[in-house]
Amino acid sequence: MIVIGEMRGKETLHAGLTTAETAHLVFATLHTVDTVQAFSRILEFFSTDRHPFIRACLANGLRAVMARRLLPSSKEGVKMDPATEVLLASPSVSERIREGQEEDLHAIIADSTRDGMHSFTDSLFRLVNENYVDLKTAAAFAPHPEQLRSKVHGVTVKSDGLISRIKRPQ
Image 1 (cartoon, rainbow, N blue to C red):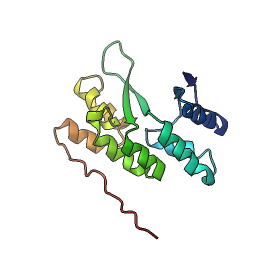
Image 2: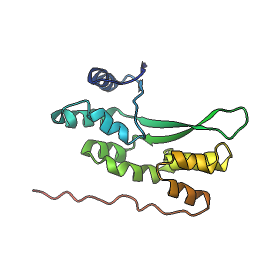
Image 3: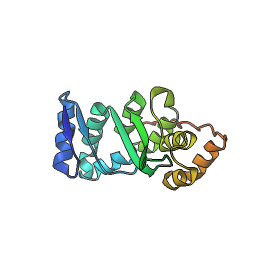
Image 4: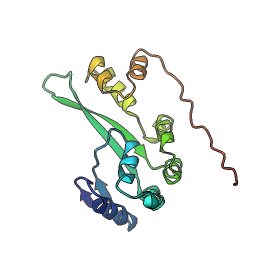
């Protein structure tokens, strides 16, 4: 097992990716706002001609991405509570990464809660529902405050799911 405190440069990222390809377990941190942004953040360290290789490494070696935000707690004696987002490397996630279709990953997270994935909105909802954080605070940290407020008030919106892309021969 290898732990990389923070991936700040191309060399560290490349070392982490290639080490993961050799069946080592690699834990690493990276500053991003959510799980999906991690991919664009990683790719920005490399020239565009290297992106297919980096995407393939990520699609093959990645097992999970977790993002965390610390919120002021409503609980007495507790200063902060974590809101999290979890993306697991399912076959559909790996395919989207390989194909450069990260915009679909939020929909996959929303449709895969039974598989262990969850969004920041889901996590914030749980924190509000269990009185760890008040709604005003949670909404300030929410990627989609209105979606969180609706969920807290019992309004659920069915996800549209993914739109299939048809690849036509050129």
